[in-house]
Length: 432
Ligand code: LLP
Image (cartoon, rainbow, N blue to C red):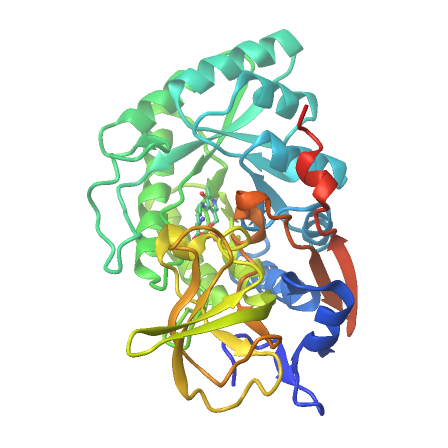
């Protein structure tokens, strides 16, 4: 009935998430409020880990891309579910360290890791550094030398596939700030160079072709190109690459018009491609890694708001303003992202009117959902914006000095606070 399958309606005709009444959650924790269904997150993790076992004989590792949503609790969930972790900054790494995440399963990404970040990573024995460029490689080799460590690296490759467009294209990816290009030979060159450096142990290649992708074909093409690179490196240089990381990017259902591929279908098809290329080229099967972020957490999260002013501008538009907005969800203002929303009471009510759900920031573009068919709604009502579990809290800001909402997780029909609401004092704590 709803775009998220962890939602329901109870006997009071209120929306539920993970079986818990959303109106009661709003009462207990106040609004705006992020709510995530932990059981659903775990189910999503298991969908990937199960598929990796089924279709790739367990010779794989699923990394949770923590940029989608990072906090201590989600790191613990990922660890408990046997996932590794993709981090892309010292802050995400620090969160993983503090959560007690197994460091050998942490992969450190980023196109401009600083000396301090690399040092922090090496001191904490992070499993892999995914090297982006030659400058970073020299920096890393130097730090590893000083610390007397050997560091296992993977390389971020641009395979020449751009899946950001609806119909994916195979050109234009050279113009990307991430990684080294495959087709110009840059990738091969840096890997050969790295394999001769002291303190550097080349183990993997990595690519990430985009996000919110609904098509399997670009992933298959990437798998083919990357496995062929592994074979080329062996044939031409005797370099053995044992890890193939194909990134994340699997699309999710934000609105009823989105039609994502079942997650395990990606792993099934990708495994077949990798196995075929390896068999054809006589290469040992590499370990496969995948890095889903959005698809693990987005379909498990909602944001609950209270409605304030409802402004009807005759023949123009009706603005329904809520107590949050671009500070807790900047995805409309950044990408014109589309969301669905429901009233918390009587969520299945007839959607009789087109309204625009607006935030409270001092910014005209501060919209959550433009032109959505919605039931009658008044000041004081609660609404839930759906599928906000990814890239909402993690991209939130204090614009207009608005404190960030708390995050509540639902597990086994019970709620627990995993990130506190920011206080006014939090807002000024670094001011001098
Ligand atoms: N691995 C790498 C190297 C990535 O760069 C990303 C996302 C992922 C994995 C996870 O991708 P996912 O499965 O979540 O699609 N802020 C944007 C999304 C940016 C994604 C950046 N990289 C948004 O709100 O849509």
